[in-house]
Image (tube, rainbow, N blue to C red):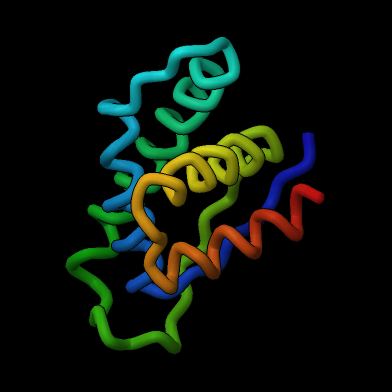
Amino acid sequence: MKKISLSISPDGLFALEKLLNQVPDFRPTMFEGFVIKSACIDVAEMVHRKYRKVSGEFDVFNNKKKIKINLKYHECYHLLQFMTIMESITPLHFHLQTIKNFLDQKTA
């Protein structure tokens, strides 16, 4: 299976972790929504583990050091779909928009 490596700054990781904290509250109404939620729960756990590990090590304002997250193709696709849904509710932060654009390029 194709893996996609996502390199993000600490700010991007914190913004992504905050967005993915909303996954348990996401109430899907159709089958596609349940698939998106299921895949995003796994991604949220992975990002949260990385967030806890990195939160004590990195300076928030040091954007030179990048954090690498390896995602499977289907996780990237469903994360992109979740970000698109959440963008319709609230506008995405700059770092989240950058991540969304990267995922869109990799899954196209």
